[in-house]
Image (cartoon, rainbow, N blue to C red; front, top):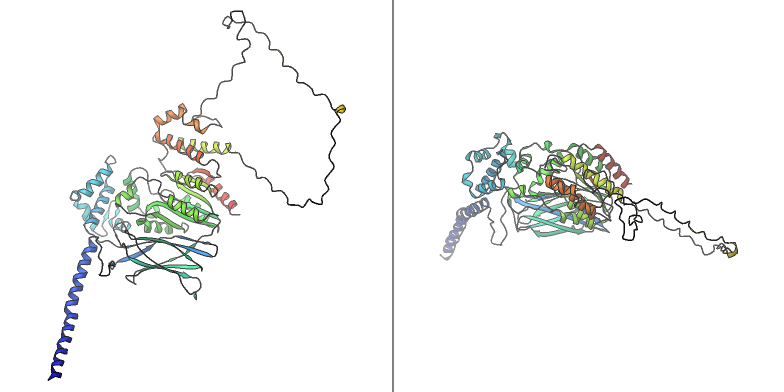
Length: 561
């Protein structure tokens, strides 16, 4: 009887366990999945009971190409990346796409763009329903390009960041039998980004980054080891190696970025120049830009499409509003990357390339002052309508070129003092001293002849006569020659004082008629003064300037010998 009761209890327990497995657990799991799905769609974080973030099924890791280098017998591997999940078409993303589409389609350049964006963000109901429907329809064509293309190019802006989640970085070895492969564990920051530098004692080949929450989420990247010496090319991206349209109407910038074919961005003469430079084995490329990291996929596709040299890519970490990030006024934000590059490669010489649409000149002059022996030249590409307010870019461009050429002529070339031959002269006979000449045989010192008397001149009716009848004008020196006119942009003077140039009447007149042109003259003058004492040259060039590309290529070959 007792055994039968035990069997019945055992049977009831087994049935209860099966019911729990088949009914209750699926319901609980379904509820958790539903909650997580809603949370992810609303960009809210969901954590498990251990405090770990639950990852959406479409989570991925993006690795940005970074340089690595060797000091002594150690390798230093730089790793930078971002973890995100592709965003669904929730209300926030639909509103954002609607705002951008409306901005692109506007043709009235007199509209206050900032005010228009604020109106759209704070009053989303005012958005045109046709704009929203156009965005939602996959593959529908608009006069400005495919809505699918716009969504594809903005997909990382619409993605959800994966913050505070653990990852593991593993550095592969060239030696297959290598023991003690170096690993490092860290967490993504509050925006999903991560970066580190890992020191290892073996030659690396590949970087693997894997999520510690889900083993199916990982990414690989080849290690780029740059030489400690040789030449480094530091290049901007927007309007330097691809046409973006940073200056001027921001609608034009958005149309270029989101609706144009990537081949329309290309600058053939600059691309050809870079490809020729890359043929030299002693050259490494560093692409440093103010573009947000969410545009990395577009930039990387473009570099591959036009066959630009591979290199490390350093972009701005984006934390704020999408539209503000794309439309904000550029400023000096590259210094952190630029300083780090020159600090990591103290034996490298650098050629810096930028454009006149942003503040590349000031950014490069700053590092040339901080590292005076490393920056060979600063090369600024001319961007249309960037030099003048009065459609007179060529006038200002020529004057800037002349300023640079004159200043180069004024800088004396310092001749190297030859080192003495280290020869042992201890056994060498010293020649006898030459005796002084006797005083009796020395000639007498000759005196200089007196100056001839100045011829008398008859007093004129307007002469200055003193009370005793003396002509006061008689002994006055002849009048000094007239001073040279102050330097003006139209002057042909070959020498001038940079400190006095900006106070000349002609420059003050230029400030009244063309503020942008006057500002560029001031910028070049300030750059020349800041670079005094360095070997850094400043060059301005246009896409059609064949002589510049030819001369720079010859100079580079000489440096690499």
